[in-house]
Length: 262
Length: 227
Image 1 (cartoon, chains in turn orange, brown):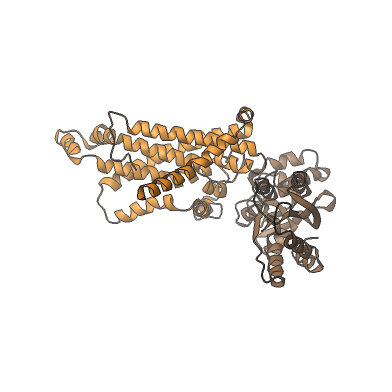
Image 2 (cartoon, one colour):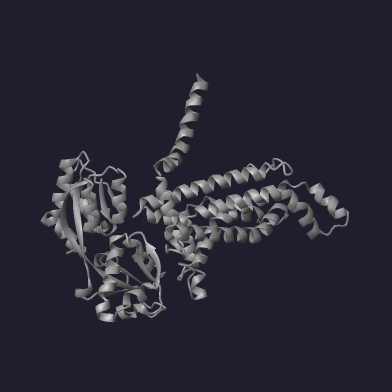
């Protein structure tokens, strides 16, 4: 009896999760797809999304890796507070992130006021919004992977006379790689999907700030078929990202990393 | 359930309140969005009783699909330019709009956005042939409804934007300068209200529309600047 109930519940939620995605593809007419992919609206949104999300991931990795390492290995007062603050944007509603970014970097904002100009309405604003919501995912994953690296291995390297910086690059980084990669992929996916903070902080202009999610939203109001094609595109990208992430984490040499399940 | 254009927010909230006072057993649920969004919602089968749009075009399109019955003209509106007081670009009036600044408009599919572009090309009679084109070079964002155009200027993010005259009646903010548009160049926004054809509360929907069209309803609308 309980097994039956569990099976029913499990199938219900499974159908609920998959059905809307299937609906996007069953409603598509494939002739529309070809027409819309050459539509400058779709094309420029796709390009903008790719460029900004890749820059956002790069920024998250460059600036986030040191912080993740400090959080994993450092001992200092307020470490728990810093750790919590870094993860805060992950749980914030995107609209709150948008308001917060405006109040900080808008023309009348905390920082914008002193800059003398606002960052809003620019491609840079799109990247800032993406880094704000997505970098915490990378930092969290990187911190987890650094923590999981066996300290003894680092100690061996150090006692063999390898300098700390070299030890970091030759021991710590390679051992954390699957987790770092996993974090990058999740960060990239989150950056690609960023909508709320972008439309509030960066605005909505084709080729400048109109990323794929904003283009879908805009197309919903006039050209529904374009919205469907772009949604289908994003679903395909998401599936590819998911498969890539799984593939990377299952890599035989890297094994099933303990951070892989983050 | 009443679907109404964003620009109708304030008067419709008051109208709903007064309607509920007359029909104590009725709860009016209001849903405001850009008219083009309302149209998509209805086309996708959202159940609603009454819809009020900010132009005739979208209402006609709904009518052609048999989604609404008997649209009626119930209000008129005009456009104004709102300018951020003391804006860094030094924009003070319509003629300044060709100078570099941050201009925000509603998207072309939004009625207010369509009207704004119409006004810009009408203004070429005053400011010369390429006025519209050089103004639109300063466009930094296309908003999804007229209220967010106003918000971008009120918050000081944008220097100027085109909104309805009625939108600025609703906010009394001295950070804004309201610049009227010469009548010959201005457009008239026609507001239509109609019953949604598929709904169940036909009689109640009729009552609500009658109330909006009644002298009391018109008084509420005109107190918010509608003609």
